Image 1 (tube, protein in one colour):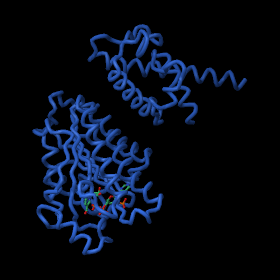
Image 2 (image 1 turned 180 degrees about the horizontal axis):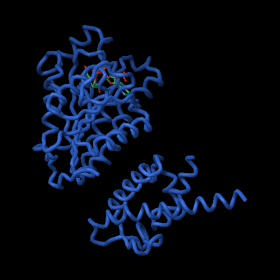
Image 3 (image 1 turned 90 degrees about the vertical axis):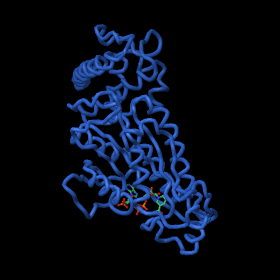
Image 4 (image 1 turned 120 degrees about the vertical axis):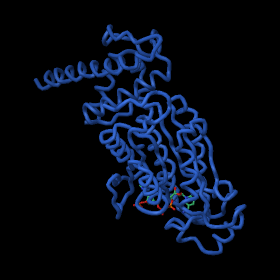
Length: 245
Length: 110
Ligand SMILES: NC(=O)c1ccc[n+]([C@@H]2O[C@H](COP(=O)([O-])OP(=O)(O)OC[C@H]3O[C@@H](n4cnc5c(N)ncnc54)[C@H](OP(=O)(O)O)[C@@H]3O)[C@@H](O)[C@H]2O)c1
C-alpha cells in the first residue's frame, strides 16, 4: 500500500518525489531527467529507443507515447514500483517543417499522435494515480511557434496549440484532485529537433523574441522548477513562453 | 455441455466483480454524504434514476474499479466509452449492472 501523505496538498518529504518524464533519451528530456535526479527525485523516463545512460535512481521504459497500451504499462510500473506519482513532465514531442501545400497527411497524423494524443494519454493515466494522494504537478510542452504563427510549422504549431488547450481544460478538471497542470513554451534550443532548420530561419525567429538568443536547457528547467514547487499549488492552467514571446 | 460450463465460469467472474466493486464502493463511501448502499449488494443503486452518486463521484468510482480490474485480472478496460453510453440501460445504474457490463467487456477482450 502507499503511505499516506495527507490531504494537505504537500508531498511527503520523508521520501523522494517521484517524477515521470517522457522523451528522456536525448535533448531537453535527458537534461531534465538528470536535473531532477540531482535534486534527489526518483525519475522514470521513456522513449521509443533505449536510453544510452543510467543512474541508480532512474528507470527507463521503451514506450511510444502515442500508444495507449505502452502508456498504461509505464504507469502500471510506476504504481507497482513507487505506489505514487508526484510530477509528470510531458516533454516527448516531434516537429515537422514543411510548406503547408507540401505537407503529407501522414506527417499530420504522426505529429498529432505524438504531441497531442501522447500528452493526453500521459495526463489521463498519471492523474488517475496522482489523485490518490490528492497531489500532483503536470507540466506540458508547447512552443513559441504557437504565438509566433511560424510559417512552415502549421502542423507542429497546431499540435502545440492543442497542448495549450488540453492543459487549460485539464487544469480545471484536475483542480479538485490537488493536481496543477501548466505548460512551458520554449524558444529554439539546440537539439536534434531543430537540426534540420536552416540558419536564416532560426535567425529570423530569434529576432522576433524580446530577448534574441537561443534558449538553454536551464531556461526550461527554471520554469518547470517553479511549476513543480509545492508552493505553486495556486498556479494552474498557465503557459509560460520563454524569451519574451 | 460447453455452454453450461461457460455459464458457471461467467457466474464466478460476476461474483468476483461484485466483490471487487463493493470494496471500491466502500472506500468511496468514506468521503460521501449520501452513500452507496453496499449492503444491498448487486442491487445497490449507483448513478441515474434512484442512484446516489454525483457525476464526479461516478468518475471516481469508475477510475477505482478500472484500476482494481487491472490489478486483479491484468486487463485494461476503459469503461465509460461510447459502447457504455449507447447502452439502452446504463451500465452504471447499479453494482450488478456494472459487474455484468465489465464481465461482458472482459469476454469481448479475451
Ligand atoms: N528544441 C527546441 O528548439 C524546442 C522548441 C520548442 C519546444 N520544444 C519542445 O521540447 C520538447 C523536447 O524537444 P527536444 O528538442 O528535446 O527534442 P529531441 O531532442 O528531438 O528529443 C525528443 C525526445 O522525445 C522522444 N520521443 C519522440 N517521439 C516519441 C514517442 N512517440 N514516444 C516516446 N518518446 C518519443 C525521443 O526519443 P525517441 O526518438 O527514442 O522516441 C527523444 O528522447 C518537445 O515537446 C518539443 O516540441 C523544443
